[in-house]
Amino acid sequence: MTGIDSQLASVLARRIDGCQGLLSCERLSAGASQETYRIRVTTHTGEKTLAMRRAPAGAEAPHSGYPGLATEAKLMRAARAAGVPEPDVLWVLLPEDGLGDGFIMEWLEGETLGARIVRDPALAVIRPKLAEQCGEILARIHAIDLESTGLAARLSRISPEQYVQATWQRYQALSTPQPMIDFSARWLLEHLPPMLEPTLVHNDFRNGNIMVSDAGVVAVLDWEIAHIGDPMRDLGWICTNSWRFGRSELPVGGFGSYADLFRGYERQSGKRVDPDHVKFWEIFGSFWWACSSLSMAQHYRTGPDKTVERPAIGRRSSECQVDCVNLLIPGPVTLIAPEAFPSNLEMPRLDELVASVRDYLSDDVMPATNGRTRFLARVAGNTLDIVLRDLALGSRHRQRQLERLRALLGEMGDLEALRWSLVQRLRDNAIALDHPGLAETLREAVVNQVAIDQPNYSGLKRALANAAPGP
Image 1: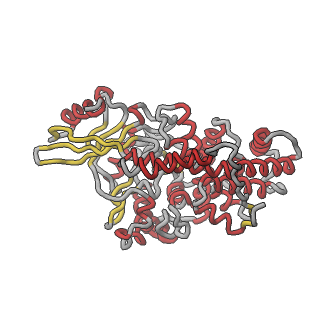
Image 2: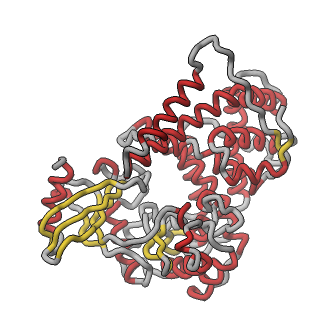
Image 3: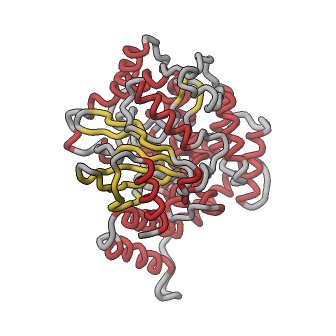
């Protein structure tokens, strides 16, 4: 028995009624911010499956302002009482349990992988009904009484302007010049929606954080960033392109329409939905996830969870940035053509070395493993594909950025210095969002970066609808 298994067995025996022993504890691949485990136990009636959710390595939740897993458990209990599909939370871990921050809950069966939810033939009948059902569930969440549940004292309150500013500041603290992020922040602050009555906001309600069966939504998951604020944040987030899993023609999670989502929400809440208000939060969603993806890479640098998954998620920032391009500054773009790899001055070449490791992961490691190890092997292989594409495209891409920035800013200097110069002008309001050449410069830089990071992303395909042949 490992250390965590031994400690968990003791907790289960003391805290969970009817639990007689631990059979297995498996960490699942899902959950980049928190750890999720499948636990098999024996009871007086036979075997039973439970789930445990805890902070990475048992440490406290790493993000300031997040409510913590004890409050997350309280949120799930309140939602369940309000008719939101949720698992029953059986025990919230205490310091003396020795497992860190987290809780143990019942295990529910259903699909949580967003890509399968939008494509699995077994869900074909229920899939067209999911968007309307999600609207109804969100209306129930937003109607939860914050005072009687005790949530008002546990959750932070944040206005749309505060949320944009806080997200922008969090990105700025990472000290990486990403001009499209600064452009998007400026746009959001100049187009703030009217204030609505603040409600409970799940804040991560999306395809991938709901469990689905052929009967519909089985559970709403991952309450770790809930707050009190604008309820339309939740409606915009489930429409964000990152969570459509390639089905961009169906804006609600890749399985439904705006009209379906709004109809379910309006029927349950009795309140009309303003599509423009939701669109603001859809744009914010791509902006927020662009910043949060970069934060994942920072967490890899600082720990405690230094898995291969975190830097890979960091490279997803360009996906979100291209979604911001498509929503705010769509238009023609030139895609950089790849360079031919050099001749056999070195044998094997760098690309051959990288490809050999990638192929080993996909052909040997993945078939021989399962669970989280198999998942991380796939992530590692995808990461090496990014390296290969950067070897082929990166040099020309960065040179083209340099030339465009020099022309736009009228400055000399290297690429990093010029990107910082543009970022600072955007932050200081020293350059207008409609400044000649700005949109074209940002659009080309972002589109070519996502072509390196994830060439199959649906947002890139949308951006390339107006693409010109590469130089």
